[in-house]
Image (cartoon, rainbow, N blue to C red):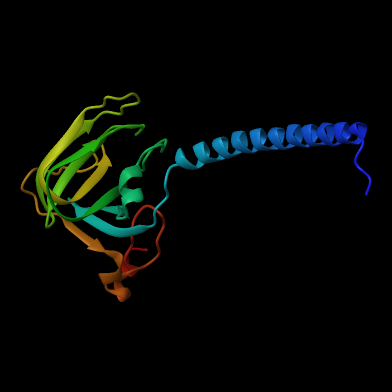
Length: 189
């Protein structure tokens, strides 16, 4: 059996060193690309489907519903604007006291309504955007849902009972064309 020459061993170390340099470069590029991609995904606004409607004062608001912990946490963050006929309904999963909400990374003022069984328990008007922590924390007395609408979009006060309905319970023969702004009945086309 022949032993390896020192010269061959040297070539093996050089080849291993070159391979490690290439792998290190690939790992570095992968980390950078992964970090940028993750940051992009985390700062994208969520686009939830409209699942509920609110009718108030002759107006209809199309509501997205946030129900999972991830949806509740993201809320309306990172959106550039919100149509005056749209809003977000946060389903809290049960009755909660001193419900905290903040406007961190929300880009426009909102009215925040804390609801218990569709009755407004607390109203926060003109909650302002916040881009750096600490942000003001708005607390509702008690709520099982929280509604966010564009500032001044609806004349809602503490004690009001809101007519919020899931789209699945609306009579099918009363639903017409969905234009993206409101639901129209067949007679209103």
